[in-house]
Length: 520
Image (cartoon, rainbow, N blue to C red; front, side, top):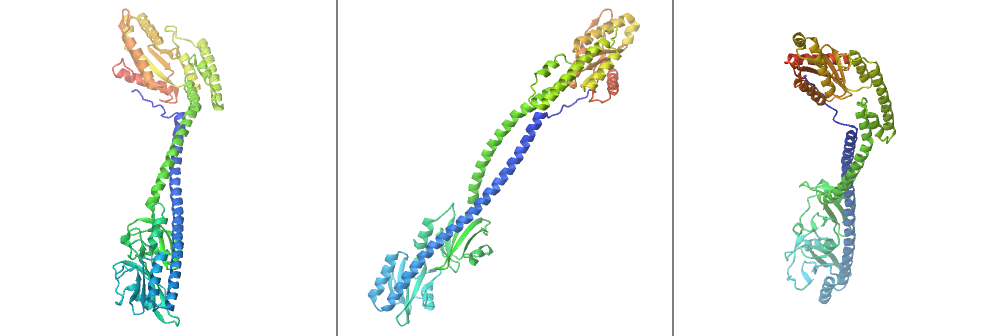
């Protein structure tokens, strides 16, 4: 049975390119992971710092405004305490606070019984004879000190916060209080400061009072709602300012910066969804990845070109190492350009081996006996060639050839005619095989061909050309004869030359048993 021998799938250049691809791919994956991690962590750190800074700026600016508000209220309270009974003073002071500061949506004056005795703007529909018991008025009368309320619904059906200052006369008697209101669901001091001046990459800012109710929020529907302070928000209650990461109940992670407003004990919160931040990071990573990919393609192209310079001379020399018996091989070896030390050494070694081989061939041609009948090498000559092939590690195939029913030819036509058959076969062998293929007569009607090739397809095709040529060649007075062929390979079939010869004989025997006139 004909054996199929597989050539190695990779050569030196393929190995260099494969290692380059693996190395570059590993480096690319690592670089992508490192860039992804570093960029996102850096963005998170920077964003936390910026949110903390923004909330601190807002808190500082708002605190300054409220300190001014409280100063104005204290000034008015002191002025009114000197002449609380003067209606003109009360009206002028409420009008002044509303018009000059611009901090309040409305200003009103309440006596100690709870009557609103003066207010501005006058368009407000307030009954001065009614005793008012809203949260802001009740708490201000009760506390008799500076008071900032939580959000509550006023008698005018507005969600408000009041800032009140008690009024005492010159003897220290409590007379009532003066207060300014901030309409939380309308344009006000807080909304103008927070909504117009600050903002960073889709973050949003809101303000909580000391009761954890929202004073300001971009979504006005949330104003007045109480924030459910989970464990994640405890840093805002324990520290004056800072920044942290928070995962809310909906599984949305945010970056939070916060700062307290000392004058009113409110908390300014700057919050940013981390997904929005990562969307920017992903865009950066994609751009970096494209740049790295283009650079890697350039590196691969350079390696591909350089690998050709490195591997091609060695590849050509490796192929020539198995063809040292060809007459033009020295010229081919000499054309190889030794681009680096190893190629030069390999080239010199091959040149010496080729020279030695040629000298040995010349010696063999002079000393080896040939078969006198056929002109082919005899067993002695064949042995010398086998030894030389093995010494220089030239892969070869052994073709064992035998004439079918040759005994009948001798018995029927005589030995003279049998010799003619042997000579005709020898001429056909020389014609159909190359000069560097060794054709031998091993004895009687048996022949051996040593073919300097290891490719099974090439060897099999050569054997078949000879078999078919014999099959169609008619010999005078005898007619048509056929041959059977068995094939084995060195060193693929065996490292032992004698074993390879036996394998070729065994394949020949199989061809005989298979009906003759065939190749195995």
